[in-house]
Image (tube, rainbow, N blue to C red; front, side):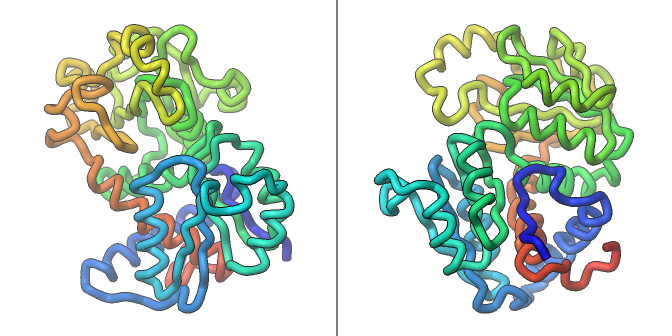
Length: 309
């Protein structure tokens, strides 16, 4: 059987996603009861970080430990990756010593090259192209609060970068309507938009995007690696802040999400992110459960305890 990777949302089927979310719910319930299943006993996850991380490192590392496994943190500063060793060679060596590898990379091409040369599953933990693990948490969180996201209206307001790309892919995979509002020059990749067909619509203003939305999502205006553009971006994104007035245009029971970290007073106001419609803390915690379910599936070839796949 060929090695299964998780490089994009299209690497799992609809049935597998149903099982993944079911299993994530089981894992969350078990943790809340103080139970620690050891499904990943003696399994090892290698974690390569080219970018800084809080939630990704914590969720993967804690998730492995709670299931009886372990995780090894690797960065270019303390491995041969940072000294020019070919990616192909690193992949061939590392994949002989661990059971799966997650990568947070600057360049999506690096992730793909690594996966092509790995004998164990490789997980996309964020690249300049997409962030599919975050979407697992977001869809799971919406489902826990409001039921299925299929047929719902989702608004993305802000930079048409990796998180926006993942929401476009998610609209295709999970069958919801996505409206994207991004400033001129910050629109999402045309190829990704065109592939989504009528699942995605681009509009000019944030007000138009959130009108009647069931879920409103944003991200920082200057992502990792874009800090030098910060002042220009603050000017360019004027009018794209999620505030109470904007949320008032969405459905009365609309949820607000943000992958964090957030800059209060920039892309979102404090009263929104800390308000009753915000589920960002549940969303952050959900990273651990959905990724545990994903790692179980990739390492074991099944979702233990799930009945839907």
